[in-house]
Length: 447
Ligand code: BUP
Image (cartoon, rainbow, N blue to C red):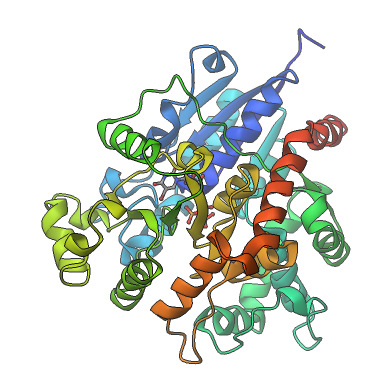
């Protein structure tokens, strides 16, 4: 009822790739009489602050969570964005030690519900205050399906070979399997999900992940409820910075579907070997490209041109000339993917990026790097909206393989069906209403 909105505290993991789906879910729920308190560190909240318009700020409140002051973890590192990888364990530790502050926040707000990510402590704090808690997993369900299967039945073969990564020896897969055989890890993973009320929310939709959603629900013993693709629509009124404007006007001069967008997400830093092969693959493919490059925040004060000259193959920038744009920092990704000049997305297959690519009908050249990305790359192939660039048996990426897949997906006849599937997916998603959110609201109200 209008006078009694449902009040929800949300606590995502401290990463842009997590806080944006939480924000998008928050936006949808506020249209159904919810008030959301989105709780995160100031460093993480900064990345979404400008998306909270005056109107939204009535129903989405940003609540800063201050991590204990750790001398070697200054505030700017209280988010995974640009976090040098060696500091990740410190960030996790600091987040875990914010339990007391979080408990104050909950007792101050007294919400009807907590929606949490993968902090096992969050639902316990809520339980102490009689607040129900629901987990919202922002990863692809293919990954959850795999991990929960092996955590539960380490000796039984995984029933979906279609998404089982081709390379059993990859460090990613080895790490997952080792962890599955470790009783301590097993317990932790189940503890997080078991503390969720009888449902678990997941980002995605049944048409592409239905069988995985059903399977994971059956092994965990809770209903996994998809919340939809949650793609943030590009906001034409949002002021772009100078670099973004330059990129978009450069794209305006390129022909329809003549250019690929290249990005490996907000968290991953390319190895020197991969950076060389990707650069040379783009050069070989002869295609126009926009490449977003990320370096750890340690490097942020360096002059970008000098940094690029040092990191990219010798003479690369001169040879590609006006055919390529390199952006160090943050790209207006959805505005780029929406642009008619874009004909493909060379992507690490982060779940948000894949949903955005499907939403805008852009076929994917999949170059997965870690964690859930190899599973998502297989799903992208299964759904038919992209092709994976395979590595060799030593896990090395090769420039020729990348160039071959780019050409196939973007303009060769043999890629026509992939392009068609991507275009069909766009139409399918356009026609999709908010049925997932209605279902989610029904479940949440019934808790
Ligand atoms: Br980089 C970058 N601009 O320059 P994923 C990313 N994004 O808008 P990730 C930009 O960040 P995990 C940039 O549109 C997407 O919504 C992009 O999320 C946006 O990958 C998000 O694709 C990136 O899920 O996170 O960041 O590696 O894989 O952990 O989900």
